Image 1 (cartoon, one colour):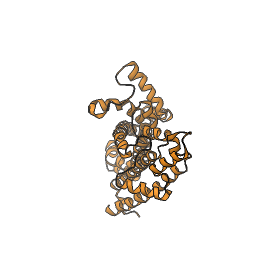
Image 2: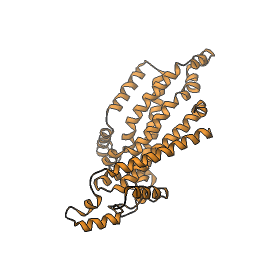
Image 3: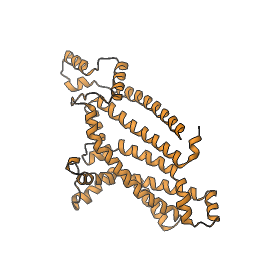
Image 4: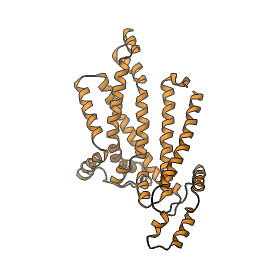
Length: 315
């Protein structure tokens, strides 16, 4: 298990190094000069050159890349071009909204998908199974921002149970913060729960057709015992893959939902930074999100090894 974990950790470090180069090069080729954008079209060349020197934009790309990477390793993400504040502080403030939102949505998605997928697989071909297939197909087809608008109309405008947007801050109390994140989390969770439920159903149906399941049934175990003791654990590998990918998506891909509900999270920060040509913020936030995705993938690989011991000795 230790050797398997070390191999996966080495692969993660290589992926992070490659990702940092790709992100930096992608930002470099984006047209436009941040200094010119900040000062306006009528700024004199000398003023633009002075601001470029202040921001470090006059240095060679390799020098700026090394400065950026070494700073991130020390926890220093640089200074925002627009707000003139440390990027690390901006990210930390927004992360305390995006991370709880992603975890909340993932918990809701898993809590919905697991019982629904297991129930559909256990009653394959029944009316319940067909209903689950239809409902999950609808959940996959409908965009999450449409769910968000429907939730706002029903629960915020008509019923008045939740606010239509904004975030009061965690200093206002845990309950107030969770309440503000509930509608965005549901809007994010419903499509993901539909995907996860279908994967859970398919994986469990495939597992129930394996030889070891038939052997367990031949030994006298009931269908319920076989399902919970043997089939479920062996069906978890593809489900863990989807859960890991979903968390990465929920953390990095909630830009639309954060804008619908006016949540000051990482997604909205990236959107605002792109609009303001604040490239150091874009680089740092995207790199942080890539790190989160790769870290989650690494943890999913370790979960594979725990679920399926055969992977521990695999090359």
